[in-house]
Image 1 (spheres, rainbow, N blue to C red):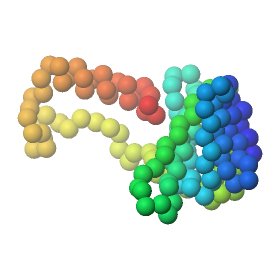
Image 2 (cartoon, helix red, strand yellow):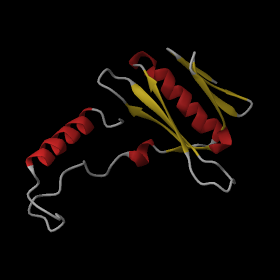
Image 3 (tube, one colour):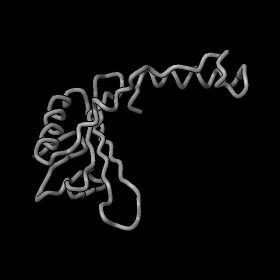
Image 4 (tube, helix red, strand yellow):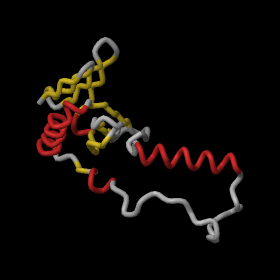
Length: 141
């Protein structure tokens, strides 16, 4: 099982996922540590991002490792196949459906009792607008 991308290669060998960023770094993680994997839209060009979440297992230290790999638009079909195979072979949870929000992100109305202080200042309004615009344009960031 292998996925070749520009500058990055993902493959499984002997039950270990290897993510190799050519000329930079390599990550080897046993597949039994993979708690979830998903494919999410990323960017404006039709590309996606593969997001892995790994748990440490029986170790005494808590934590997790998140890995995100950007996939250009021309490789999205192959990336979907790769993720599907990982899920099938290793029984990994499909969090794509669970990750979708039931209702869209929206601001709390100004007249709501949930506001601590209202109205928000001009700088805060500018920040809110920029954040919501970015989230709408690229929810995977």
